[in-house]
Length: 122
Image (cartoon, rainbow, N blue to C red; front, side, top):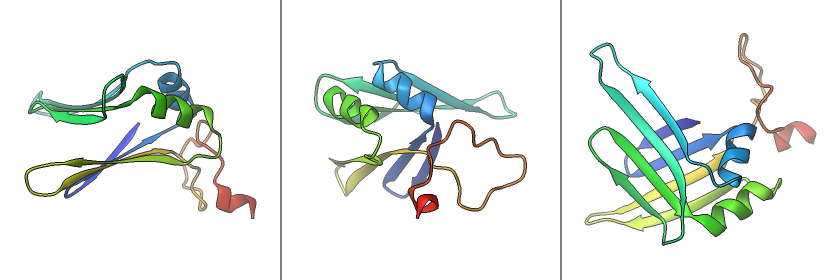
């Protein structure tokens, strides 16, 4: 699972096995370990309630409506899920996407678990 953060937007990209895991109702967890010993984590999970996002000082937890996550995981053609959550100042934009193969291959990069890029088919 890849994470990208820009201002008030969080974007996660999931490979094929991660989409399968979330489609089976399992929690996805990833982390980055720093030389100081501190760890930054991020998680994606399904919820029966409304979508939400939390940050506890060391981890981001995104909870997306279960029905929406399961439908997305089962649909080969649906690229992503977008959520907009209100905050005190601006909305927090969430985007959960399937991770496509790059159009320009990079040496040493394993593309075997990525989704076929639709632009590569045209």
